[in-house]
Amino acid sequence: MIAPARVAAYEILSTLSAGQADLPTAIAHARESLRDDRDKALAAEIATGVQRQQAALDYLIAHFAKRPIARLDPEVVLVLRLSAYQLLHLSRVPASAVVDDAVKLTGKMGKRSASGLVNAVLRAVSRSRSQLPLPRRPEADTDRERVLDYLSITLSHPRWLAVRWFDRIGLDRSEAWMLFNNRPAPLTLRANTLRAAASDVQAQLAHQDVITHRGQFAPDALIVDEGRPLRSPESTAGLFVVQDEASQLVTLLAGDHPGPLILDTCASPGGKTTAFAATAGQGALVVACDVRDRRMALLRHTVHATGASNIRLVQADLLEALPFPDQRFTTVIVDAPCSGLGTLRRDPDIRWRRSEADLPVLAEDQRRMLRHAATAVAPGGRLIYATCSSEPEENERVTESFMREMPDFRSIDVRTVHSQLPRAVVDSTGHLRTEPDRHGLECFFGAVFERVGP
Image 1 (tube, helix red, strand yellow):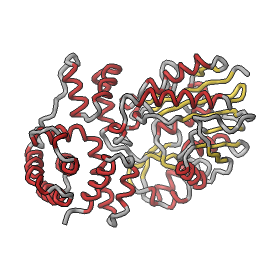
Image 2: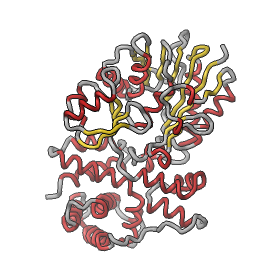
Image 3: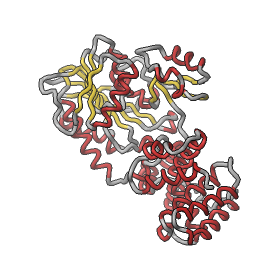
């Protein structure tokens, strides 16, 4: 019998290859067919690892198969990817068992004629584990093609992204970003200060054998070292939400006193929304919007779980005019839908789903959203723009365009907006900017504007 985790990993990768879902959705669906928690964890680990290492795996498969990937059946490629990943990166199962299961899985997928090829390629991969024929890091960055081969193949990122990063930040920093993206991300929580202080949440988790340490930059961040907090009573009690530390820093851009009326325009899943509600206090009102039914359901769940009573939900599309023609808010937040290229560590499939052609399209939508959000800002109020992108088109170029088009707004140095925002995460232009090599965090960007005109 083929190990259930490998069959589930194949199903996840097949779903991704067909473009039918993103990685978290595909994993969640496949896990439903598995009873053993160890199988669930292994299937997710294999599928996620394949997404991180896909370019390197494909290079090795083509090398040992002595033919391009495009000449192999898609089903065979998936079997080879997940099996090669397990041989190279997971040591819990003997190589013979991995190869044997791969051959059986090839037959199960109707490609029995390729069984000999699968067997030969995987045995060659296993024999070469100590010295894989992958492009090596060049001694200097002057040999551009060798550098790009190393970054795009060995470190497994799209070549177009390797070109961008190498040209913008050089070999050393590009390498650091990619190595960061290829490591598993820790589970990070934000203490729900509507219910308890971060230190109290940490202590209560410790009583449930969940060991955490405090984040380096965000004041309420707890990084899980041991234990399973999502199965603890504290998760159902709403004492925390799952939220990346860099994302938590965006919530600080609302300031120590965000005012009595706050609008969060792209609010789901609700981590930032509930943080704004906690900062603003019960005397303030937070209006939280999103566009799709599923996103609204997720937002509603988060708000209910955290016990935030000063939030009102409104379904609205920021690409259209906001449904508040006569209302002005003291703080408006646009955590814009973006490429997600800053979160490749947590969402490795994004690197293969995005293309360079996506960036100008996304940037145009982001500029449009920012203009619509600006109409809701009261005189003297503030407008926050944020993304989880690493790319200038979605970050500073959007804000520069906004400043040219909207003379009644001025840019504010984010160091002045919140007493707990660390100076280390603010760039020379006064924007929030987190980067893997400098902060050990995903790439997030944030800017703050103040309305000075009517």
